Length: 278
Image 1 (tube, rainbow, N blue to C red):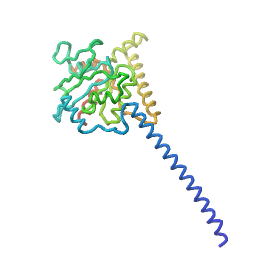
Image 2: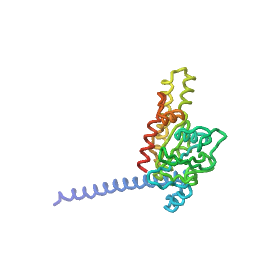
Image 3: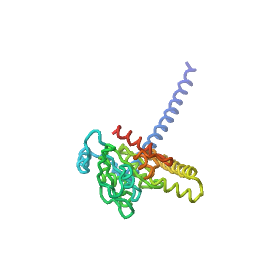
Image 4: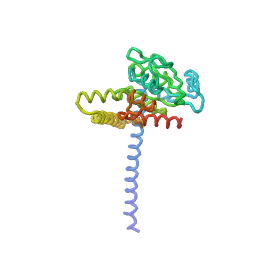
């Protein structure tokens, strides 16, 4: 009987040690959850989302659809084209619809032709309606402020157009779309211009200049993902940055494919895939 006393004592001490380890682990887990929640709420505030009221009501969505003149036919996709000023949104839309200056529904382009209000362009050839939106990127307007004021939540999908590296406003808008589970396609325009510039600067052939440009694109996206992963809020949208040019898009639409295409074919494949998923 005496031999059992040390064993019972050992179990008692061991139980206390195990309980202490368990309590410490639980406290650490609760601390991590609290820090994540605080970081998430702070990031939501940075984006302009109120953590106390983070949802968009069904009534808001229906009212927004009426306001944008949403096409309710089941085989038609309503697509918003967003991005910073002079990113090439209107030029991209003209190329996709194979329109030139003077054609009906041609979207005005050029640095002096800044889109200041939403323009709606039905496109029977692609079974969709395009909406050319005013440029984002104004510091006084949060990403969510732009998302909400432009009613991006009312569209079947969003195309985010950018010209060079992803800007902070691009990234924040992507994160808002990710938060609200908004389908979004990212397109990097004017690739031919950038590749040609590399050709002249480096005195390389086109293929070498293209490889350098695409390498920098991949580095840009990798850098974005690393920054997002390092954030405690962990807003990491999963996307492909489709590299296209106006001439490449136009050639694809006209079935006059160019050997200098980059991601034009993949972009249209993604567009069709997203349409099916809408």
